[in-house]
Length: 147
Image (spheres, rainbow, N blue to C red):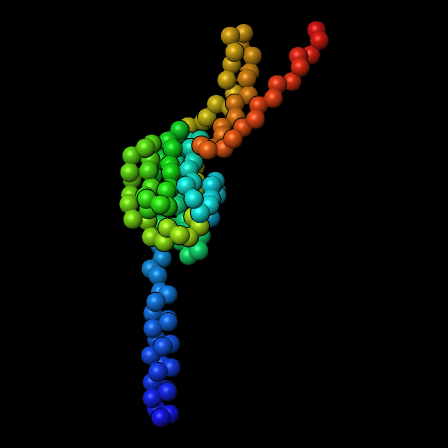
C-alpha cells in the first residue's frame, strides 16, 4: 500500500509542476519606461520614434516588441488576443490574455527633437500636452489677466 501512495504523490507532483511551466520572452530593457498597464484594452501613442514592448506583468517578460514611429498608436486587446498598430493587426494570439499587461516605450537614440510647444498666429507659445488614448481630460480655462 505504501509504494502506491508514494507513486500517487510523485505523479501528482510532476503533473502540478509541468502544468505551470511557461516559455517566457526577454525582459524589457531597463531604459524603457512603463507608459500604460491593465487587464483590459491598453493603448499608447508614441511621442517619438522608438521601440515599444508589451510585457506580461505576471510572467515579467516581453511578449511583443516592435519599432514604432512618432504618433503611431499601439493597442493591446486581451479579448481578441492581438496587438494593433494604427488600427492594423500586428500580431495575434498573445499568450495569457487573462494576465495584466503593460506597454513600455524606449525612445530611439536618433529620435527627432519633438516640439514642446505650438505657436499661435501672433507667434506666442501655446503649451502642448499629449494625452494617451482613452484618458478623459477635463479642460478648465483661467480668467484672462487684466492689462
